Length: 370
Image (cartoon, rainbow, N blue to C red; front, side, top):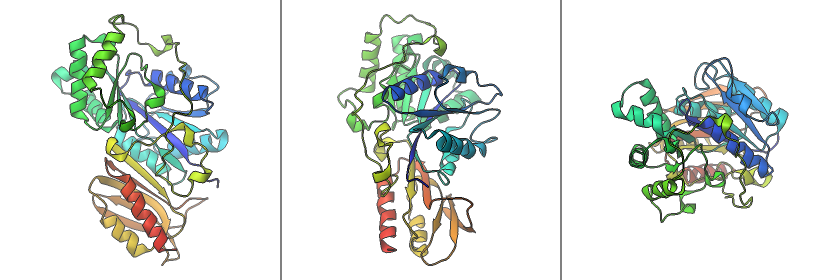
């Protein structure tokens, strides 16, 4: 099994918010940089019309007739394995169905990382500014509640279609997003026209001198000629190519301490600092077995901000491999004999926990077992 970790990017957002437009821009940017992206598109229905907007040269898997987080969850590992093994992409981007619960989508993708070496990036949520403004008036209904979940889980929020709102309403929606998810970076946009190369940069790398309101106002002034109510159909958006510095990337990886030397995808992504990620995922690949009592003690000392944990690993004081599950401050361990070449791995999901500290403690466990 190759020591290659594949970056995975997840796009969330309600139906019609502009995710496919963002996907087109991402693909164009990555291909322009010389990378080979692959796409997984998830649709509740049985037909993937949005997939027609993606170049046939881009490897794509379709997951139709359900949501990744529930009815077709088991298909995700098969689709990702086929893409990685068959196409060997530099990265994978998942466009989740607009009806999907983002936390459960995170959970489904992290399950796959038990079998495939993945580096799960912070979620980007596309918010339809006009739709949000309409629903915000009543703040009721399933659509509004789902949209709120998608907003809370995003580490980057693209407030899209702001040209459909008057400036005062734009600022009101931007402020609302900031209150709803103070950990996220908020980017106002029309047709998801954003600086792709900076989407996954740390907050420290952004312009600290400008507030959200200043950025929104500046955007409005720069785009004062935008026509109110202009067509946002992504099929009409042909200006997909951008020119960015291909060397302007952060190479910090904290999912893996020993695989970086063999990881040839580092140039395609960056890890924000944990304090700037609302929903945080940390994946750790072990070099060898660890002491069972020390690992159990580590699990009991996990911060409350870690909600879920799962993994497959070996202990130095037992002959079997174990599957562990952690939820609601409790852990279960089950002896297993995995089929295939499954790495020793642990995955943790939570909200703005310090994954550098988790990594440090796991590295210490490994050193103790040497």
